[in-house]
Image 1 (cartoon, rainbow, N blue to C red):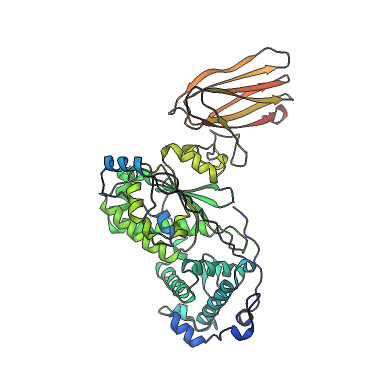
Image 2 (cartoon, helix red, strand yellow):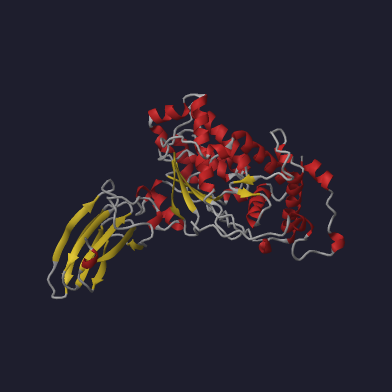
Length: 486
């Protein structure tokens, strides 16, 4: 994740209100802002056979973080028959994240931001955001922070306000109302206090952050199949008290993740979401439906524009029916953030956006948490990708020019291949390191090996793909000189 940029000072609040956006039209065309009136008035890519989770059109975060549920009709055979005849359209344009630099905004967008800042400044000055709560009358101006960013203190505030404007299609009045409601909700929900609570680690395998995408966005994984564990399910959703605790845990996790983002104008301030739908709980779970509804409402109302891309993996067959039903109600902007992949295309799809060294092993990559089982490689060690053609052998040749221990790891996504390794010194003989071994789909996801070399030569790693399908080979290696070994 990019380090947070140092805050850039803005002009004083009064100056920021009276200064016009860049490149304005003639002054006569600039409407005069009436404070009282304004405050009163304001009081993708689709890939396979899968539709997104139901959410409000401009709220992909709600869809990303809520637990998906099956559609009860039509039946599976009917859907499979329909799938043969019709595919989800692939003509949607992939979403491109907008710039938060003021100079990159259009004049109208600059003007809308300028007007929203004016309304916020007046609300702060008149302490409107504290309405209904105890107020410290000793302070001349209300101080309000969202996600650790004080409003109207520096350029980070502009990025926050732009999120609310974009969530409401740059309707200033609606954006101000959404912002006001969010500030009130955060106060009532006691979000700042929530950050300090210890809510346990029971759900750490359900939602977790791991690595970054190719553009530097942190990646959040949502693994809904974990709720197949009946004990965990009941502990999380059995009654209203447990569901509220789950909601508080989810908001706490989200808040902590957001506060690590960079709200500078050129910083990374959105999250790449991956939702694993394998073994997702079905529609018969009443407790889950209630919890999902509660989470959707909170997320869609109070966390605008925090998802840069939402990738659904291990998508089941019934999502086609779901997509057909709700697609007409989704905006182009929302649909362009969604990507779908069935079980056989999960790794392939993730690698389009995330480097293999950043993808967890359970999803086809080479990344595991640093521990005794993987002391040699981290997410900072690059991975080489090679396409294995059907019914062919591929040999990776690693030349070694020093006495050392060569450490390597590799995997073939889906396996169903044979793997062997040997060392060939310059003198010409061969040392067998690993005789040819058939690797099945359910074998270890990653092969890790090493070999101590005392004379110059080369390591040969051979993969034999006997299948009629092309495969993807991932590998990386590291030279460890003897002097560096303990």
